[in-house]
Image (cartoon, rainbow, N blue to C red; front, side, top):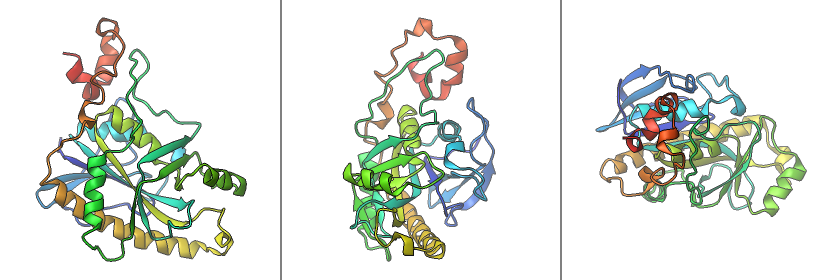
Amino acid sequence: MAKAKIGVIGGSGIYQMSALSDVEEIGIDTPFGRPSDNFIVGSLGQTRVAFLPRHGRGHPLIPTEIPFRANIYAMKLLGVERIISASAVGSLKEELKPMDIVLPDQFFDRTRHRVSTFFGNGIAAHVGFAHPVCKDLCDVLEETASTGIDGITLHRGGTYLCMEGPAFSTRAESEVYRSWGMSVIGMTNLQEAKLAREAEMCYATIALVTDYDCWHPEHDSVTIEMVIDYLNRNSANAQKLIAGAIARMAKRPLSCKCREALRHAIITSPDKIESAARERLKAIIGKYMD
């Protein structure tokens, strides 16, 4: 199987990475089923990159239907160490404008129908999640944006509220989220961040603001054509940012502690873990089971 060190998950509007060369399409089976789509593995400079469209090509999957565990586990099988995830979001703050990019450093979970862990069914583990994204990876993204990529206004920090969907918020919900101090609202990235932490991979979200959420007095004047235009333009910006960040990462070794997230997290006694459970999570827990 082809290997890649960097994984990219594309959200709404990002269904491919045109900058990749020497590409091959790879289908992967996991203990948690098939991922959202086949992976596109290719080269960006000297770095091999695995790209996955989160909603599948053609966007057939609503957020609740995304096979998050299969997506992240498949990344692990490919050898991915760092994941950059792009996601369209609504803004909950006036200063976070449509076409801006936000690098959230916190998440708030408002989902209800999703599995957010690889564990259970014979293995208990509790990873630390106080700081849910990789600071080092966010540093690289911020540094890349600061080089003056045309069209990019980037904000570092803030909280991504992850809602269930697929319907958008009511006005009352949007106002409550603002009163809580939330920054942006989306439907996908919380599960990815939790699973990437369990899989000991660095993870960062590039939140692409397409519009203000419905709290904003001008919300009703926003047309679908405007949102699509913002989405397309922001997707192009995200691809430039991702490509630049990957080039920087090629020269920067891993130095964070994301790779050790499970070191003290597995609390089930090894002699109580059945062989089927060990095999199911081999790609994640194998190094702790020897």
